[in-house]
Every structure is written in structure tokens, then in C-alpha cells.
Length: 483
Image 1 (cartoon, rainbow, N blue to C red):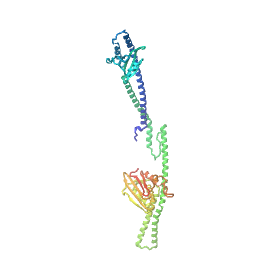
Image 2: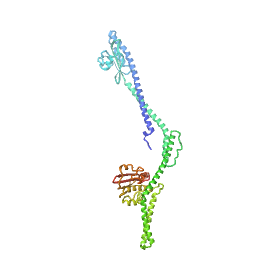
Image 3: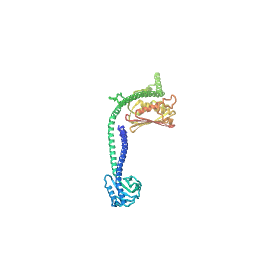
Image 4: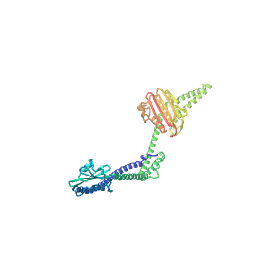
């Protein structure tokens, strides 16, 4: 039997462990990447701050000397900005010197000189008297320091450092963590496959042993009884199998006794009909014997009387034979059987009750039915139980309709009556044991329950439908092929 891989213990364990690994590695990756980003940003900030503060000293001195006239304005600040832009240890994208009003005094792009910046970053830069680090955008970091001595401030030195290299390094790191996670999952799957193969091999062996165990033969434990948990499971299986075997024997014994009990009850109901079928021919025989003893029979009538006596004896023999065949309890023996012949024999046993209750039997049977593999005696009991119920439901007369047909590899038997019907609340549990609506002494309440058991053991089904005041119909389906 094939099982969906995700429904196996190995599949479930692998799936859950893979999810756990992904979640754990994702958490570790997020923590590691966040930590790495912070460390890399700290390095950039530390180096950028040191660079800005070192250049700020030269820029401050230059602006002081220019103010007191020790040096002339000769582009020294522009040289400092040019030196900053040529540094290769940091990815500087802009450098500038602003005066105290935000006006650009020097810039790596000359076109910016003379412009006045009024953005928020500039405002915070001009307001700060300490080195300030802030994000100019998602892609750049702005580091600024005041150009001042004590309370005298000439301006602010600002540089912008690109974060593209940082993002590229982090992306590369994320890819590495992703491949590590995938590799770890593949390694875990291989390890799980090996371990589960080692663990499940004895389970599969035990399963194969269970499938090959004959539930009806002798119980013989496997040649190798393990001493681990699998061995405990083996022992439990064979103990359970033995209990099932014992319960099955007890169930069969009980069911056989119930079958005999119900059969005896049915024979009791047949007694009146059997007595009538025997007494009538016996009366005719005695009458014939009486006339023969008197010797007053004409020669031409003696032959008629002998034929009447022969018919009467045959009638008695057939009645007794049918009753004995029904009453005996042989072993269950299935054979290819014509279901119509079984029903006809059942009807012959009930002929007296049918005529006494003025019941008309209507046959809608298919004469050339395929044979079915059934036990003749058990199926006879099925039909007698159903016929008796129908007869008792039509005490004032009615119609008993019998139909047979073959459809889709199944043989279908329908038995319907025009009796008083069954209440809906009783119909739902009509196949329950010991359920009877016939009052004390009217029945055992086992007939339909036994009927259902016999039909199901033959691989068939039995269903009943009924309407109060209209009648009841029983449908029996049996497989044409042996089950």
C-alpha cells in the first residue's frame, strides 16, 4: 500500500524539522546580519568621524588665519575638500564647508559654492556644536563637525559617505546564510532519511509480517522476536490476534446457537402447516384403505385409488423432507445455487399459512438467473424469516410479491407485502436483536437480525422500506461472484 510521503512519520518529521531549521536559521541570520550591519556602520562612522575631525583642525586654522590676515584667500579650503574626495579608504560622495548661515563656502562641485542650504539635515548640522552623524538618505551617511574654537564658530565641515558598499556586503552575506541554511536542511534530510530507514525497517518488516498472518490458521510468531520496543509491539500484536481469534470463535458459537434457536422458533410456527400437509393425505390414505378392506371397489376404480394413495404418500414424503432439510444444522457449505429454487422451497413450507390467510403470491422472477455462491440452508432461513413476517402482517389477506433480477454483477431479490407496515421509529432499528412488535410469545426478535447477518456474511446487503397502512418491502442484494 503506497502512502503519501508527507503522511509518513519520516515525511512529517523531515517537514517539521526543515521548518524549524528555516525559522531558526532565519532568526540567526537576521541577528547576525543586523549585528554585522551595526559593526560595519560603526566602522564607517568611527573612520568618518576621525577623518572629519582631523580635517576640521586644518580648515579651522585656515579660516582663523584668513580672518586675522595671516594668510590670503588662496583656495586652501578647496584643496582640503579635494583631498577629502580623493581618499580611497572611505566611499565619500560629497564634501563641503558651510558658514554659520548655511552658505556653501567650499564644495567638491564648484557649482554649489554660494548656495544656501536650508534642509533639515543642514539645520541640525548648524545647530550642533559637536560632531554629528545622521542619515542624509537610505543610501548615504552625513558626518559633520563644527569649525570652531571655544565659542567662536566660522562654519561646519560636512562629508557624505555612501552605504552602497555596505548594502552590497550585507546582500552577499545574506546569500551565504541562505546557502548555508539550504545545505544544512539537505544534510538534515539525509541524516533523517538514514536514521528513519534504520528505525522503520523493523516496523516495515513487522507490518509485512502482520499482513501475511493468517487470521484463521495457527498463530505462529515470527522467527525473530526483537528485544526492543519493536519486540514489545510484536508481542502485543500476537496477544491481540489471539484475543481476536478467541472472540471470533465465541462469536461464531453464539451466532450458531442463535441460528438454531431462531430456526426452532420458525419450525414451531410451521407446525400447524406441516400437520395439515400430513393429516390431509393421511385421511385420504385411511379412506382408501377402508374401501380396499371392504372389497366393494369396482376393478375400474382400484387404479384411481392406488394413484391417490401414491400421491398422498409422496406429498407426506416431500413435506417431511423439506422440514428435515430446513431443520438440520450442517456445516456452512457454499455452492453454486439457483436462488429461485430456494425461495420456492421456502414457500412450499409455508403453503398452509399462505392459503389459510388468503394471501396471493405474485412472482416477478427472472427464470434464467445466474447462480450465486450461497449456503442453501442459511439462505432458506433468510427467506422463511421474511415470508413469515409478511404473512403475519397480512392476517386478513393480501398480496405477497416476489421479484428477482440480475444487475451489475449482483443478484437482487425483492419481497414486498400489502400488510399493515412498520412505524418509522421502529423501522430505524428493525434489524436490532431482540426487537419484536408481536407481543409476548409472538417472536424472539432475532429473525431479521439473523437474516442481516447471514446476508452480510455472503457479501450482500439487506434493506427494508415500509409505510404504515401500505406495506413493507425487503431488498436483498447478493454478489454473483464468490466473495
